[in-house]
Length: 164
Ligand SMILES: [Zn+2]
Image 1: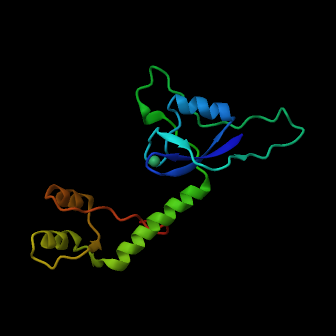
Image 2 (image 1 turned 45 degrees about the horizontal axis):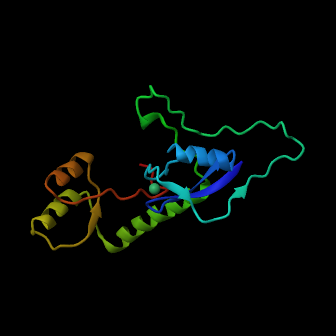
Image 3 (image 1 turned 60 degrees about the vertical axis):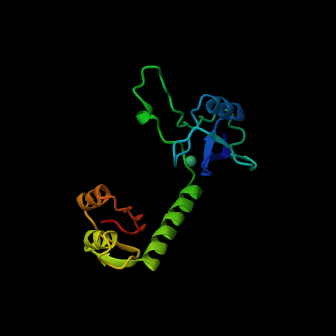
């Protein structure tokens, strides 16, 4: 088993395990190695030395680990069934840290308007209120209505301990 640090053309880095270098080359050539963040198949090895998994010495018959290799048959309806590549814990932690940073930046720099969010966003958009960054709560219907009116809103990444 060899772990490669891979990077897609959008700069996402992630790690994936392969049975061998050749297996990686083959899966990569068939477009089966995709970025878990943006699904791009334009993935290349990041310039980093691969780490070789520790194996039980003297146990040549140790069972091989099952790899989440996407099995795409010609009859497969679409990419919906392609399993997610294995992601090591480290990049996932980095992604969470990034989302947390985005959230903290918004919370620190924008005004919290609570459930008045839709009204305030509308007032700012139509010039009835001072232009400023705000955040707050909106129902999916309210968010949809704002977007339909051409008002830019985006969901705030949830805090890790925020499970409503
Ligand atoms: Zn990507």
